[in-house]
Structure formats: structure tokens, C-alpha cells
Amino acid sequence: MSLPDALDRFASFQAELHLRPAADGGRHRPVVPGYRPTAVLDGELHDVAIYFEGAEVAPGGSVVARVIPVRIDRWRALFVGERIEVREGTRTVGELVVASIEGMP
Image 1 (cartoon, rainbow, N blue to C red):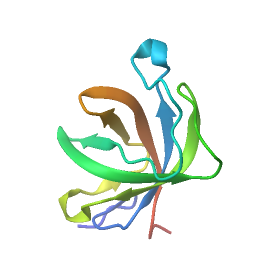
Image 2: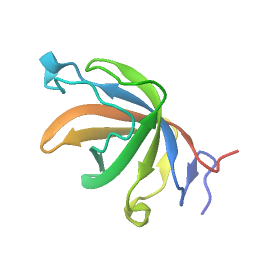
Image 3: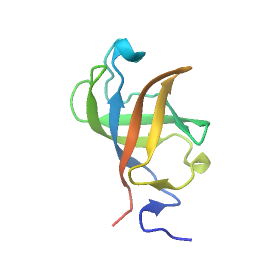
Image 4: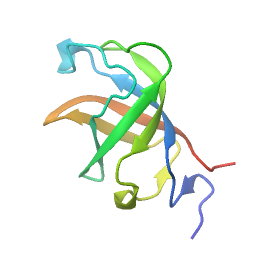
């Protein structure tokens, strides 16, 4: 079944990465391109690599990034606008908001 705003298989997707401020339980240090957190989708943990323009993003900041799932075979279809929790260990440090999916028109 094909849906207009989702792809069943994709290699990467663009998303807005929003990092929580340290005061709200987020990171205390900035992240750099190649950041490798865990994404939580439907309660399941998935490793991802996140790449973006610029040197770093500070806690409390946001950036448009390319997200590459490490094991794509474990992901379901994504939808534009979907929110995905970003964790380091058991701590939620931010979220991804899907902006576009590679291969979509």
C-alpha cells in the first residue's frame, strides 16, 4: 500500500533536530555532525547517524539534519511531521521532526 506522505523503504530522511536545554534534562555539551544517538520509534530503540551543516549545535538549539538509520530493515514507514524521540542511554535529550523522506517527490 502506497501513501502519499510516507515511504515504506528509505535510506535517509531530513528532519529538524531539536535539542533540550541542559536545564530541562538535555545534554550539557553541543553535538557535532556524525552524532550517533538512539531514536525511539513506537517504543523501539534504533541507532541513527545525524549529519548537518555547521560545526556544532548547542543544547537548546535546533538544526535541519540528514538522519541515516543504521539498520533500516527495522524501521517502519515514516510520515512527514512525525516526531521521534532522541535519547542517550535512558535520558531523552531531544526530538526529530521528519521534514522530508529521501525518494519522495
